[in-house]
Length: 157
Image (cartoon, rainbow, N blue to C red; front, side, top):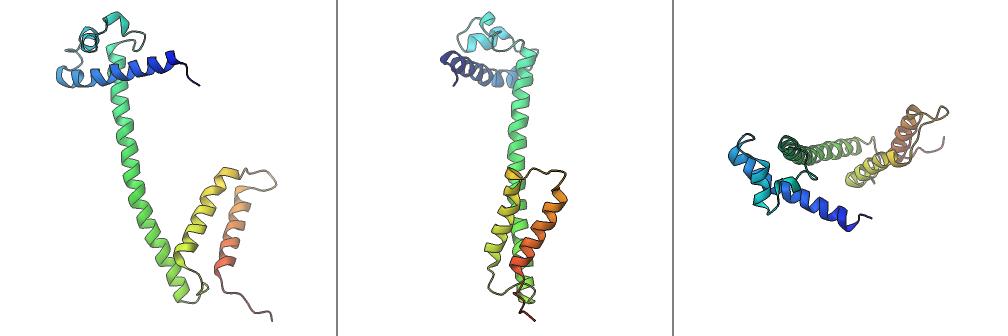
């Protein structure tokens, strides 16, 4: 559990970053001094150095923070649109196989999709390959398991 000093230091550093961002945007690196940043938040310039070693490192941290935020948002948007597209493809594929009597007609495509997706996705939480049971072995077993669940029951001969 973080101490009060750690929490306060983190809050102060965020305040420095938040204050420095518009100053760098307005004045550029050369036109922004540690003195300007410090006076904007009521600190002495020397008091900034425990939080940031230099204005260059401060600017670097600001830029990297913005790039990370942009990257996160980009991936969120792409993942959401890919997820919707993949979902439609899966449902259409499952429905086509049901319509063509390849899969059991009693299967709800949405339910089958969610069970397959979550079953495969969550495998990474518990599966640890060994020399006796490899990822390839698991892959074969997963395919057999899901196909057996989807295929019509065979009448005994």
